[in-house]
Length: 86
Image (cartoon, rainbow, N blue to C red; front, side, top):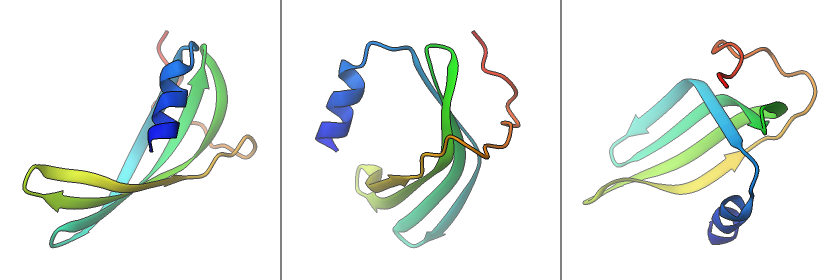
């Protein structure tokens, strides 16, 4: 994840990612989160998709062990959150 986080930190754009309707499956100390999202850069829609997070419960709390996502520029449904607030 280090490369991903470094590239995000180096980006000087105003970035906004919003998720909604997260679905959580959990059993014991593992969980999966699935949520639709939209992504905006400098106030403009950029793409949408689905985020997924695989989680592991540790002594320190829940930790993400894997992150996957789709990135779609067409066929995006309007967010139930409405337009982003400026």
